[in-house]
Amino acid sequence: MVDKTLELFECGHRACGGCGASSAVRMILKGAGEDTIVVSPTGCLEVFSTPYPETAWKVPWIHSLFENASAVASGIEASLKRQGRKEKVVVIGGDGATVDIGMLCLSGAFERNHDITYICYDNEAYMNTGIQRSGATPFDASTTTSPAGSCSMGNKHQKKDIPAILAAHGAPYVATATMAYPTDLMKKVETAVNTPGACYIQVHAPCCTGWGFDGSKTIEVGKLAVETGLWVNYEMIDGVVKKAKKVKRKPVEDYLSVQKRFRHLFKPQKNDEEIAKVQAIADRNAEKFGIDL
Amino acid sequence: MPLNIGCTARPGKSRDNRTGSWRVFYPVFVKDKCTGCGICTLICPEGCIEVKGEKEYVPDLNYCKGCGLCAEECPGDAIMMEKEEK
Image (tube, rainbow over the protein chains, first blue to last red):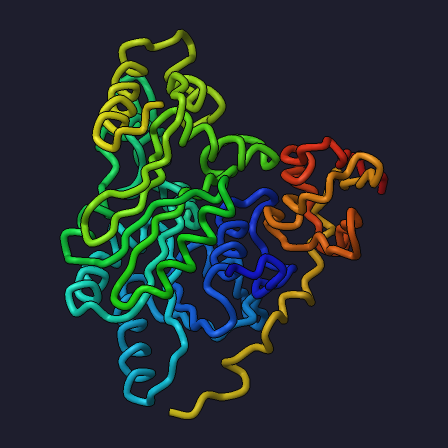
């Protein structure tokens, strides 16, 4: 059972007000429990939680480099196993460190099937360094390296499907969750840390600064992503999708119009052609995972 | 390689950094409307809402950044955001 009163992430960290990631991390630690060793690659989380000489963590925590969090976690897990210890090793990293820069080490750790849980808080760009696009940035989002303008409609690439890539490595448990549904997230983390082998969870974590919405709307935006079908909450056990969250789908406009990163789709005039392309992505998700009620 | 004291930090030492000074609005909890669901303390990005008893949730204003996420999500509308006067 998840202990909701367990507090392992202390106040005083420097995340923006309304940060989806810091809220997600609190829930993740509640799900993982006290006997956890956390590894973080470089990213917003690392920077806001541990400005020297302070730390918000109340569990052992290590940061080495941007690209090698999975390798560090693999080493810790191997050492604990040799010593006969039972602590859980959890990596909490951003989407840049997961889908782009740490991809090599991540693939290696999953190939060797270390008993670790890799959790990616997905805020869909490199927020820490100033909102550059990453492999997890959704189609048509405007970032500082994929700016929307007269010749561009923002990011022209599709979001990389990391859960499927890691499931193809033979991961026993792969799941997606969102910080907008705390109970679901905590339960999935608990399942992952208690599943032997390399497990992966991707957590949708809206970023008020990078996406351009008010800090009080973080959960609302997170829920809209699920309700429009642009984010699907599912569990994959031994590579087979089980339990995808079913929704009565809303049009994607509801999700896009509340964020400044999609502002160019509505101003100066509404771009129905581009919105239809985003809607097509949601429709594909709905068909693939069977989420329509 | 032995780790120097200087390389490590006491757990939770970020409490030294009082982020409450960032705040523009502060939350006011209305006990009469509270349903006691506890969603505010669960979702708070700071983790600064303490449970003092049944339907008694107290934000630590030394750390609350005033994002208003609790007020927005409260199912009983029991949290109001008031402008800070400095």
